[in-house]
Image (cartoon, rainbow, N blue to C red; front, side, top):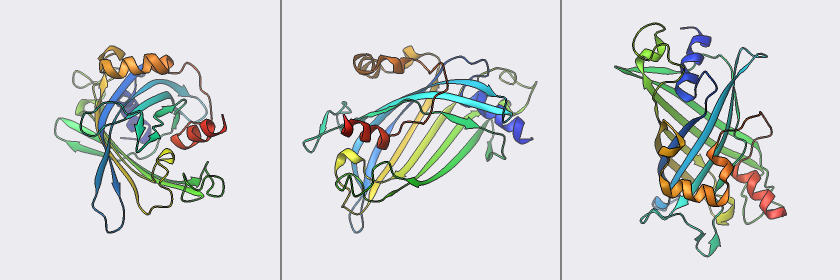
Length: 250
């Protein structure tokens, strides 16, 4: 397949070609690691991404308009945390969390009646939280992380005109995600060696109503706009680090 054909197959997996809202929900855990210390499960983690796809005429690709909310949970009870070690928990409210998707030789693996699209994203950019300003929250003036995504879809997504999902604008999908990152700014662990490993899995939902009720209620009580995908492209993207900086300045 050409890169353009692969991208079209991927966006049918990740979103919907007709611009309809698409929701992914995921759940998992967050582990801390440090030299000569055992790994420790510090949080559960659960979230949603609300997405809408548009064509990008400039690049021949697509724009993925999304916002995402995710919540740190007690690792045993799985209840949403409000404090951790007497510190207020800052949940994930990333709006926007947009992507420009251009044709490229996307890694895809055949798994019989499924295919897996793999996205490996190493990040290294100036930190929104310089150490001199945020010594308790930031260990480096460069933010470094590794994001590893896998999206699983029916194999027919690659075969135009073949199979029940071949020409659908959107196909069923599941996903896995892992992130290696520094400690979160609100944890105030910046001077401690080590960091965090996120390990999650999830699926594409048929509708927002399929999001777990507890999560929908929390979103409705705090930021009800996260029940829908953005209508317009905006930038720059929000991250946990930029969101924390805005909270610190308010």
